[in-house]
Picture 1: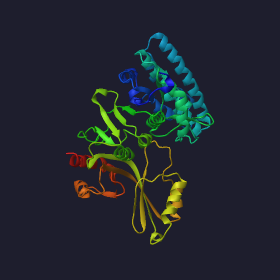
Picture 2 (picture 1 turned 180 degrees about the vertical axis):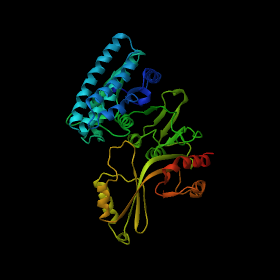
Picture 3 (picture 1 turned 90 degrees about the horizontal axis):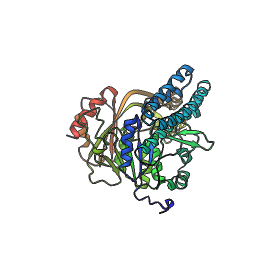
Picture 4 (picture 1 turned 90 degrees about the vertical axis):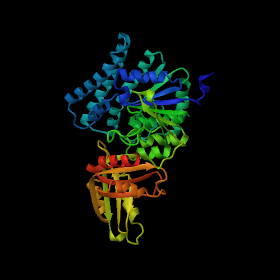
Length: 457
């Protein structure tokens, strides 16, 4: 059978996160997962755990030369700690490749410290995946799996919106068919998540959740049968197990429910990941690379069970903006003006509730985000239209399930359970899959734990 005629009916694209490629033992576990599933022919890896944090710091302004050198040495130590497990010849070859990449990184970091640019920041961030993918391909070869390193920038072409680049999906499909498909019969391709390349040949990154999203885009472009996301937890749970030890693993969940969970704070999966999978109806598996024998969660279009309550998601660090004006009363165009200002500053609204003369809007403000949120400029421009109140220190709780907009007694069950908690905003009815509300940050974990005890008893 010619490789160009390779059947894709059983092809799996697998993605391994940072903890899954953190050290040699972790990489070896992942390599054996691939060896035990011959359908896995494309592997997307994140940077080894800890490396991206170093690179984020390296990409900031005014980092001294001494600190730059210290950061690069720390990155080298993480990678050399893995390569020392190979035989001497392989270790030497890999270390040469690593040192070449780190020399390049040092040059970009030096340029960044003297003249900051978003372009340089993306270039710096890309080195984590470049390093881990080279090493992981070699780990595969040590257990007799034909691992081949592949630079994803050959196929993942984007625009030049550094930090959150948009992929040219049509070109990706064409490039995958031309450059990747012919390799899959003979080799397991190991490539990078999170990064791409613009039309000028510059490195770009896809933003938050970029590695999962990269894997999903590649799965779509290759017509894959399955996307496997390997992480450090055994699938998706009814809520964050760190909040309550009563959290239960979910065996299967629909695309719609998973999208709601991801959107409203379940960090196990980024919402963008599901978009390509939903478009092409590609089932997604989420499992633990540390304990693959324990199975995981299957995410697919149709599931056997559709319980009223599926999970509770929590998203911290929310900002609530209330705009109030008598001009809203029986007036048209007011909301359009408000949203026009928000669009100007590239602000994305999550929840909206309205009354006759006021509108409450929520915004996600994740820690480490580089995107400006509700700045003084935004407020000043809104204040030309209306009275503006900005509140911080809030958390969004989302009850995820099925038929929540039509089932009787939902509100009574939920809000009686937490009747001693101040609810700042409620959003219900727009979706059959969620009921959302805001609470004070210091009440959030207690609220989730109480609800979970009631809804999943």
